[in-house]
Length: 281
Length: 261
Image 1 (spheres, rainbow over the protein chains, first blue to last red):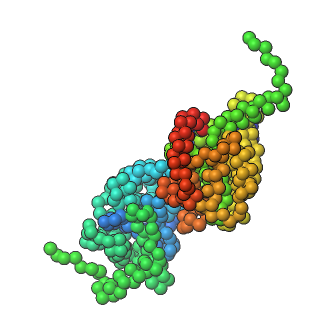
Image 2 (cartoon, rainbow over the protein chains, first blue to last red; image 1 turned 90 degrees about the vertical axis):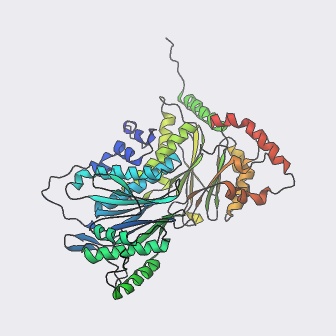
Image 3 (cartoon, chains in turn cyan, orange; image 1 turned 90 degrees about the horizontal axis):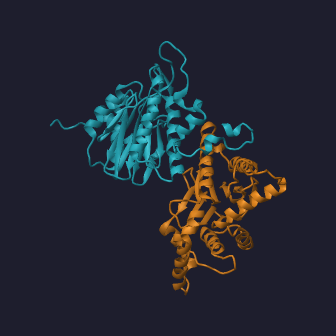
């Protein structure tokens, strides 16, 4: 800020210091109070009540990867929001879905999107998919203090790897630990049930539409057994968010497309409430 | 010990201005034109990696001539300014006017500070609006002044001549191909009135396209085949041998221009 002491309104020195292409590094340098992990935590006993997002599922298919999430946010036993959005594009070739404390998660996604965009603008080239996944790791690690007070954020990161030409999924734990998942992944309160469903539904040769159907089935199963996960709300026309990332980039399925798939699944479930049956052997 | 001698402030400023102007004049020019769907940036720049035109934010782009390290520094400062502002408030709240003001303050302070060497740069900051009447183009000379431009603007070595050429021929509602052709024509005119011919490989072209939806980011580089196709209608001439000859000639002068641009 030295250069600004003459109050000329010129760009402060931190803006013109060459070196870093990271927006987070710049924030840390110039206005550290804006970094989510940098805030002093008040000493509170017990967990803080705040809306929590729930289930996110992801699945690879031949031409890419789908990432989907239900629409419910809960606060204790209360449904805090029926139509929350928990799946976001991170950049043109990747997306992030968040489970955990909604407010912190949304802020984290906003900063993550900006981090990728900032790098792209400064460097004139995009980060590798691994690089993006690692960046998200750092951000989750920065939230560890909050996580220990019950305000955890656990995302899934999915993207199209332009170099390897395939869709890839990364899941995280609360300490920022990152692991690449093969085939499918789920996170959030309903993830156990969703993962069980995906395990039976996953095949390597699914089409994009079949992959979307599979993740919707998994979310249906999660909503069936987990009270914090919302199923498709046919009355209010609130359906899960389904996105796909392929060679052509990020795409969010339109409400019409999702409603058609969700209604088809619902119709079948009226006959068979437990969903499609897998072969025994 | 040398004895300090008196230099009048007028003389000191005139010297600094001349120093900056000379530096800028050595580089090749950049032109910016409004067309019906947005704003097009055309620079004579053989390098694919060292850009003269870049994205700053959703609707805002930056073009510069002069010393590369200096305007690159300002460009990154601008990206940081815009991203920080958008992060603190909202993406809507980042405007070309705000950015141009900050640039003007920065350039002005550096220009009048005896401790610093004046920047040998001239910048353009442009923002594409919902319609052509909402477009904003600001030209920022080396001394920190701001000029609000309309229609077309040129900066760099041959700016005066190119500007007057553009002023006479630019009209509202041009298509991208028309605007690009006019830009290339203006850039290919020499100091002494002669004409060179510029090929797609020697040009850096980018647009702020207001019709680019659903993306929020309107900036797009026009590259490779897309650029050649846009330039084609104007290119097809009887003297197909001429462009080759002139491109060789301009390649010979590339090393010097590269080090100074």
